[in-house]
Length: 236
Image (cartoon, rainbow, N blue to C red; front, side, top):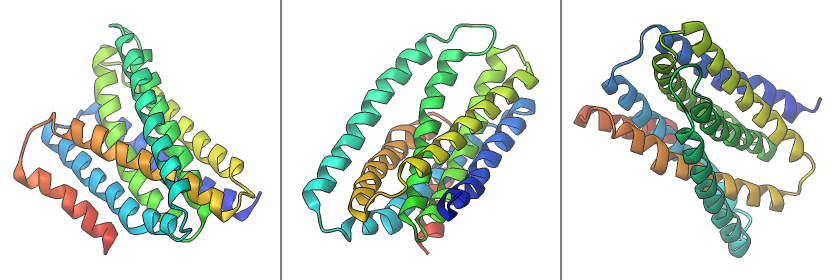
């Protein structure tokens, strides 16, 4: 196993662990809206800072604006298409038992997140480490939200809920290893194009998922400030 794949395997354990931990906590005691909103704001700030401070500068180094523009636009188009698919899956979630439609929609999201982490380690430098931190916080919030929703729909079945979150964490790990494996041997130019695609996906995650869901909870100035705290922590 190459050093990049070994790194990906080891570091992917961090987001996997935070997601499972969040799911286990929420299965027994779902967090309040302010807590969930605060974590989502903080996660959004962290992810945004990683894109701004680490990933986009790497993309610009290649000085290939047209190729990067196409890759970035493709990333936006794919995320929009996946959101349509995820919405349709969510509508199929019925009452009682596991909400398979909802879990399928979340599974798409975590698979993309895993692929992006694999890209980060394939690119090299500090990108993989910072993405690990960013996705670790994001998957913590996702684990909390998923378990809180699932435990309610399953009638309080905690074991089933935690099992569902563990399954999603495995999907993330598979995406990370798959992304790292598929990108082995690519030239720096192609890696930068893939990274540009990943930047679009992460910005979509911040603007259309994390912040949208965070604002559905209890509004508070202090909670909103956590976005800037998360950004500053990574940027520094």
